[in-house]
Image 1 (cartoon, rainbow, N blue to C red):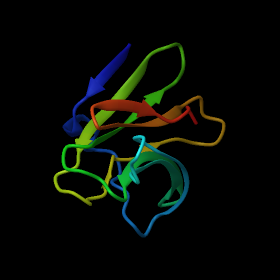
Image 2 (image 1 turned 60 degrees about the vertical axis):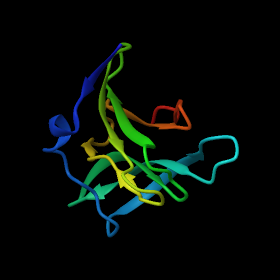
Image 3 (image 1 turned 90 degrees about the horizontal axis):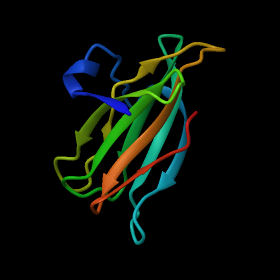
Amino acid sequence: MPQQASPADCAGWWKPGAAFDFAPLWYRVGERSARRVQLRVGRINGIQHGWAHIGRETKRGDAVWLDVTRGGGRWLQCGPFVVGADGQEVSTPAARTEKNSPLRFRACSRTDDRSECTAWW
């Protein structure tokens, strides 16, 4: 069962920007959609982080969130963060992790009244 965190609960996490180096793990959502949801993993100030991102042909009301777990079937859901206007890109704050950490992430989205998640990373 996830424990949902509001955007305010994740506000203390780093907010990644376009200049951060990241390796995207992505997938498309929706059957006829060009929307793209990514689980992004990268370094912020030299420390590895993971965050979720939705972009491309987004629609107002689409949502993205980041699930974070240490295993055991429980996770924290950071978000959802909602797209405010068609075409807007939205990222979640980034959760910090380290090499060999048991912390795992996945990016999730809700588009066209359907929720989907990436595999855990």
